[in-house]
Length: 409
Ligand code: GLV
Ligand code: MN
Ligand code: MN
Image (tube, rainbow, N blue to C red; front, side):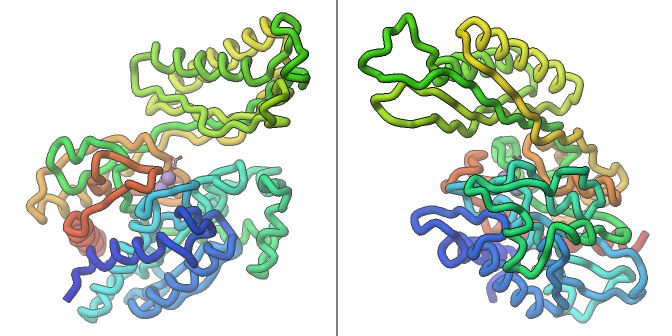
């Protein structure tokens, strides 16, 4: 018989290609696309097979529920996201959902119910790869949506409300996804870094998640003929943006800490070989476990960018699109997770998450815990991402041990 961990990995692999990807040549599953809907249908089938009832909430999250002995008790939520970045790996997000389903499947097969219900959340938008605001759907569940956050459109100009329509949902009711109250939130996720692999450990307990800021920057120059615009007379938006990217890298490097800053997307207009670029739009993502350090770096970066724009005579605007506070995991839940991990014969190790997770949003709703699973070479947000089925099996057993311990409290 295939182990639950191996089945969880195999299901992520199955979800890694069409019809569960919107792109024929890579995995890209953004929020509310046809591939997203197809993935929800497949996962709902697996939830039902595992003994759960399913529903789609007002934010288009797929939720499976396994009743407890005390039906009105606040549930343990186990979740992660099923949207992906462009050209993604197969495990960032879905593995946490699949392992949650496997945990319930194991309880169901053993005829076990806990005092509390268990709800498995397959969150719709964590990556922010379609709309600029990330973690929209966990924010709806945690009740932390802010005014204006739903007033957004994707790169093709499709509004959130229009994207929700095929799901028979509307942005007017999005906030109704708010959860009435949970006992705890558990998320299993690939580490997306090299620490566990270097230590020879299959899993580790997360202590907290780094703070994030994201911006969209627009640099405006003057488009002109590439053959006739003299070098000294140009206002080249891309040349200015290039200098800005290097300044961002330098400021983050010079901090010589856990501070990281990334320009991950850049659009150049008009985008022709024979036209001096007139406009560049790019993103900045800044993170640190220390929120004050992150904010100091963000201020230094924006000052540097304004200086470059002034020096080169280009226009410059910046808009902050995300501000995620650092999120410590709950010490008591960390201890439970660690006890479950030690019971599997794994040496305990605690580590910080540089990547963002739905857990950092759910922390506003209930205490949170995260279990990291070793990933090959620490590679993530890359199709080469790999998680070992044997490690996933250990993670599953740790999750089951955690659930038992939570039930015994
Ligand atoms: C999510 O993967 C993030 O950390 O950006
Ligand atoms: Mn990710
Ligand atoms: Mn993720």
